[in-house]
Image (cartoon, rainbow, N blue to C red; front, side, top):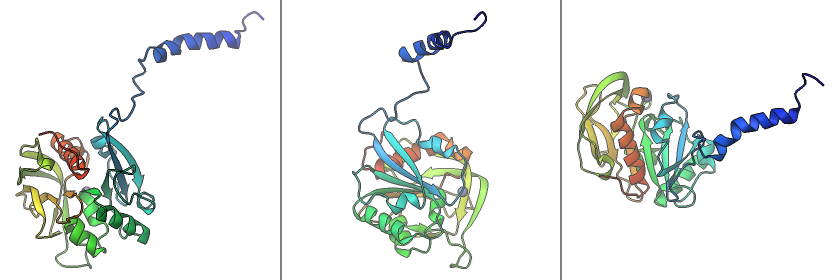
Length: 254
Ligand SMILES: [Zn+2]
């Protein structure tokens, strides 16, 4: 038996090394999420367009947000139909070319029942064949070639100087800022939207965030947010956080 270590001895040594850490509450890798019982329950829908993993950091780590990520089409196939039953707000960072009937039914019932929606960046280039959605709910559409005129365009990695166009809970705490981001031009934008943020960058139409004209639910569109530079920008993070809270009917911090 000489030289052979009993499994019980090994277990005791391992336990002595590991257990005190967990027992003393110093296991920093474990962090209950969210910490607040009244956190806003967010359904974040992705899919149909790639993006940097940094996007998830925009909504991660907030004690007042309880975020669940699901991809299209599963997220909307059996998704929420009215707020307050496990979901308070839907955030769309997806870009489906067309929606399955079940997905359209989910989104239609969600907003008709007063469910708030935050439409982010490339999500305005999805669902573009669903007229009611882009005209009445989002208030804008990216126009693909062969679909209409003029055809929308995009430009990556531009310097975008953003001005505040309206005092609103979604723009609370924001000052004019400069962000390295993608711009869109020649979108169709409803004349009924309320523009919150604007740029004079010539590769943009001007409005880069607006409130939808839809009367039954809180819907906001934020055009910024293509890549890592935007995702890590404090003003973009504040803007999206504000938009989520407002769409959920919660107050934002001035
Ligand atoms: Zn993009």
